[in-house]
Structure formats: structure tokens, C-alpha cells
Amino acid sequence: MKIGFLGFGEVASTLSEGLQEHGATVATCVEGRSTRTKNLAGKSGVNLYKTNIELAEVSDILISTVTPFQAIKVAQEVGKYTNGIYVDINNVSPKTTKKALSFIDNGKIVDASIIGSVKKVLNALIIASGEYANQFTELNNYGMNIKVIGGEIGQASAIKMFRSSFTKGISALLFETIYSAYKMGIDEEVLKYIAKTECEGFKDSSISRIISSSMHAKRRGEEMEEVIELISEYIDPKMSNATEKFFKSLYKNVNDLKTRPGDYKEVFKLMDKK
Ligand SMILES: NC(=O)c1ccc[n+]([C@@H]2O[C@H](COP(=O)([O-])OP(=O)(O)OC[C@H]3O[C@@H](n4cnc5c(N)ncnc54)[C@H](OP(=O)(O)O)[C@@H]3O)[C@@H](O)[C@H]2O)c1
Image (tube, rainbow, N blue to C red; front, side, top):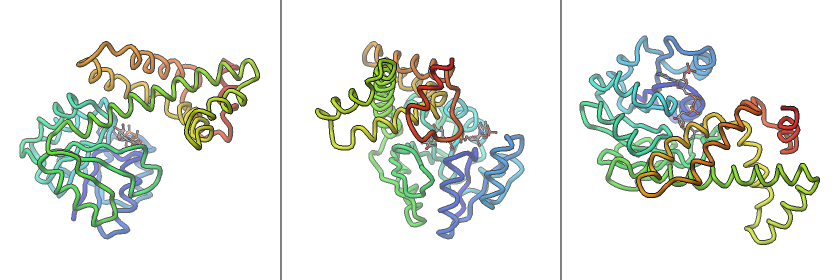
């Protein structure tokens, strides 16, 4: 089984490592890419092709793991040359997914979404939809955890977008609430009293949400644009608009932290310095 990755960042490098351990042949193309991407590919030992087109020609399964804004562009670049199954796994709306996949001439297309983050593991849950989704599940034989949720393109990305609307909205609200409480010196009490009416583990998950918001604010702000596009088809997206605004402003305040802080208060201290 030959698996190709378009883009070679966190997702591709994590999945590649496990896939190779399970006997798959993995390849990518890093021509013209950043030093980080080249280093990730070098470290993982995957095969390298000179162009994305050559990669598309030889791959049994070609997975697009670029960035939301590049999903359409790469699909357009390789669409005529893709021989195997083309999987779009980027965090994009159903509309963007359909647009990207419309460029794949052979029509062997799959809409897929990672639920949560890959967190350095091969078996992160991935949901998939479309006529060819079952063929993508062949990668479960190589250690992946892909679940088919429907036969139509757009279903997997819609689930992901609605989930994002909820989880990113909660994270933004938590950050704003607990930061304000911290400024009054009562953040721990507020967390304790909210936890009384929430589920078990609320405090730990809230702290984790505050910290991860400060590490991925840019990406989350961009992903909210895709969420807004979907929600606006049904309702005025007031909450999603606020969440997008929150993450874009958080990025301006703290940039994206490169190393995970040990405590949420470290993030708040950074906010105070601005
Ligand atoms: N990380 C997660 O846990 C996670 C979870 C769910 C969904 N996703 C989605 O999965 C996708 C990949 O995420 P990631 O975390 O792996 O992102 P990432 O670490 O930022 O990696 C993106 C990769 O795509 C490359 N790239 C960008 N534009 C390209 C183009 N036009 N042609 C070829 N390569 C291109 C980048 O190269 P340069 O370095 O040169 O820019 C980089 O290697 C995103 O759409 C994200 O929303 C990620």
C-alpha cells in the first residue's frame, strides 16, 4: 500500500510514523516547503518526490493534510493526475471540501475529519464519508482508526465544523470568564463552583482548553471562518462570529505559544504584559 501526503506537518508526520511501523510505504513532496516541513519529512524517513503531481500519480491513497486555506489549491494542482483515492482531511466546511474534491478527475474522493487532535498517535479517531470512504478504511489494517459515517461528501466535514462551533465557542467563553476572575484573584474559586454543576473532570479540561487556546489561536481563528460559512446557511452566526473574533484577538495578544505552559496562569500573565 502506497500512501502519499500532500503537506507534511503535524498530522502527516504523526500518521506516517505509525503507518510505516505497520508496513505501509509513505511518501510526500517537500520541494519549496519550510525548513520545519523538510525536517519533519527527513526525520520520518518517508520517500520524497520532486513534485506533488508525481506523488499523486504513484499513491494508492493520497491524503491532503495542508492548511485550511490551501485545501482547494493543492486539489486543483493534482486533480488531473490522481490515480488512487483522494482524501481531504483538512478542517474545512462542506462547501470548501466539495469545491476541493471537485478537481479530482477520477472521482475517487473521500471527505474525512480528525476528531480532536492527532496528539502524536496513529489511532486518533477519523470520521469519513463518501462513496469511496470504505476504501479509505483499508488503512485501519495499518493501525489507523477510521470510521465511515455516511455515503455523502460533506457529511464528515459538517460534523467536524459543528463540533468545532461548540468546542471552540466553549473554550473562548471559558478563557474570557476565567481570565476576568483571575484579574479579581478568584479564578480558582470560580472554576471550583462551576465544576459543582458540570461534569467530573471539568476543572482539568477547562485548564487544558485555556492552555491549548493560547497555543493554537491562529489556526482556530482561521477554522472559525469555515464554521461561520456553514452556520450562516441556517442562522445568523452571532456566537461563531464572537468566537472567531476572540481567537483572532488572542493570537494578537499572545501569538501562538511554542511550548506548552505548565499552568494556565502563565498564559494570563502573558496577557497582562501586553
Ligand atoms: N494537528 C491536528 O491535530 C489537526 C486536527 C484536526 C485537523 N487538522 C487539520 O489537518 C490539516 C493539517 O494540519 P497540521 O496540524 O498537520 O498542519 P501543519 O502542521 O501546519 O502542516 C501543514 C503542512 O502543509 C504544508 N503546506 C501548506 N500549503 C501547502 C501547499 N500548497 N502544498 C503543499 N504543502 C503545503 C505546510 O508546509 P510549510 O511548512 O512549508 O507551510 C505543512 O507541511 C489542517 O487542515 C488542519 O486543520 C489538524
